[in-house]
Image (cartoon, rainbow, N blue to C red):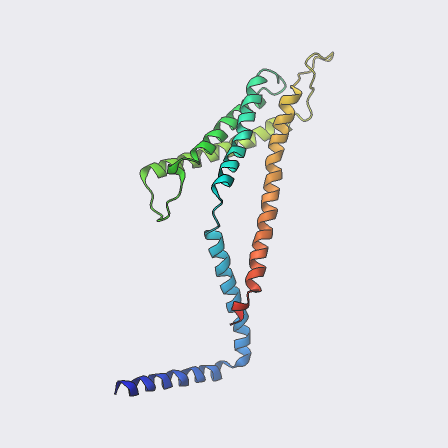
Length: 215
């Protein structure tokens, strides 16, 4: 009895599939198949973005050290030439503040409280670290905009302290370091956007070229 019912169910499924195919037709199926392939490739792209490969420990250590080099240099240059830019006395202060907060963010990113848990659970300490990082990042963004105004508005200043015209000066080492360290941020941003666009394009093309999509 059970065997007969099972055979009847299979036969009913075959009949339903046959009716659907006859109703839809081969032309519509050919149109639907590329759409399904695009959906599958988009799902793979989202999965790759959500779970990127984790770098090794040496790469993480080298990246953290590299990130700390610039803030330390900004603090050092700003402190040494603190009173050597009468033309715009906020420039050395800008370097010191950016260096201090950048170094704090780099150090906090190494602490366990700043790491995301694998089970998506959060504790109060983790919330405090995330809130602090968000506030610090927002302050650094606003401070960076102010620094752009202070630095680019006086381009190019007088570099000589003793000049016959009595014009206010700004130390050459201080100003050029502030100028290029700020410009370097825009260069990195442009490279990041270009590389990101190329990676997304490669993911998209590889998803479309996947032979499994045609099945």
